[in-house]
Length: 200
Image 1 (cartoon, one colour):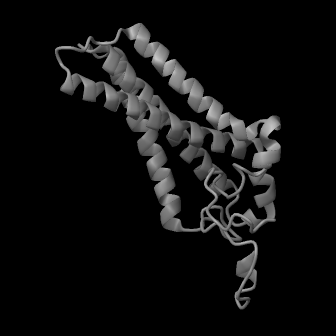
Image 2: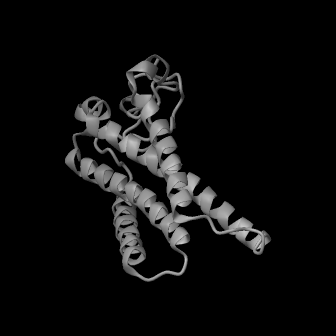
Image 3: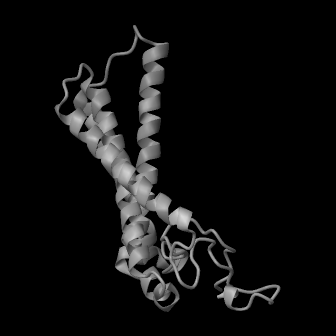
């Protein structure tokens, strides 16, 4: 890694800015935030799912949207917990195991979960925003969608988000995405946060 040769002006490949030779999450503040946000994300969204499941509501469709939004955000909390646990597992010896970790099934699962969470959250938020927009601008003309239509719409959105998240893992697309799409960095995000051609 470039940190081994600090006097070299141009060193390749560049680091990802998150990991170093010892730790997967090099910054202690980042490490603490990952644990904290994972706990808040999981706890908060589980509370929303619990309350929306059993609390009486006058708008079943809106409640269904919010439950699905909470579920998509819960996936991000699960992702953060996995990353935090793996960081703890590889603490102090990350460089020796970084290749194994980045090519592991758990790393691919983490990449899938984070992408699925982001995609589904954006799609569901767009759906909720559109629903609220139409309700406000055309309150008398618009008929409230049935729970069945809302469920079909949500299934479609989840299916699309799942397909988008799975495409980089498919054998049919490996020639395009390569085998390190989710394992391109230590936290298995599909963000290529260093120079894109540094590993070529």
